[in-house]
Amino acid sequence: MPDFSDEAEVTHEAKRQARVELLARRRALPAPTRAEAAARVRATLTDLVRRLRPARVTAYVPVGSEPGGPELPEALRAALPPGGELLLPVLRDDLDLDWAAYTGPGCLVAAGRGLREPTGPRLGRAAVADARLVVVPALAVDRRGRRLGRGGGSYDRALARVGTDALTVALLHDGELVARLPAEPHDRPVRAVVSPSGGLRTLTGDSVSVRALPLDEPGSDDAPLALE
Image 1 (cartoon, rainbow, N blue to C red):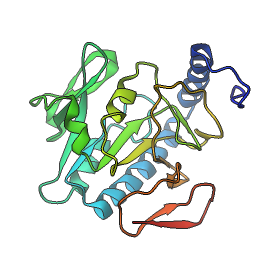
Image 2: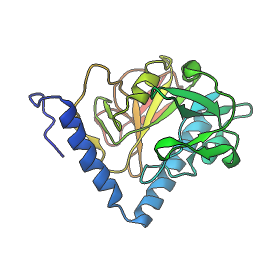
Image 3: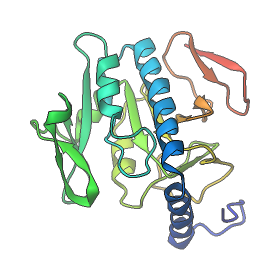
Image 4: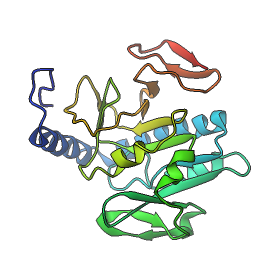
């Protein structure tokens, strides 16, 4: 990984270099390793959904080497409480995100950039504001919650609309939670990450309105954190 110390120059080139290295590392993962990692990530997230019992969750369909696997939306939908809804993103022409309900595998169609999107009615960009749990992709996240995406800025815009009491979670492979990432003023942090071996970890140290939710305390490998 490149040096992301305080003195390192934060530029688009630093992010580009990091993306190239991280994507190459993901592509080199053997298929059995990817499958096992996806199953562990799904198990952690579905357990979280069952404990949170959110009325609305937003997530996405992982593609390629992304953690969680293509089965992620169906696993999350099955874990929702009665009446709960799962929204998936629909990429707009301006690279912002609209949202539509996920109603099952049959509602997904191939879209641009290799994505799969739901075909239902568009609910508008602000639909994410009502989500209690917001699951986002990332190539890496640092210990202050700063997230490195693929460079389109779609999720930074979506995260700017998320409610203050929502839990924002990025999905990672092992080794992608790093000490420091290059960041710019428009970059939006996440509050937690899920990885295959590390499970669910909080990052930013801020409070989340979830009763007795056992998470890892920032900076600790094993200390439980009860958040109110």
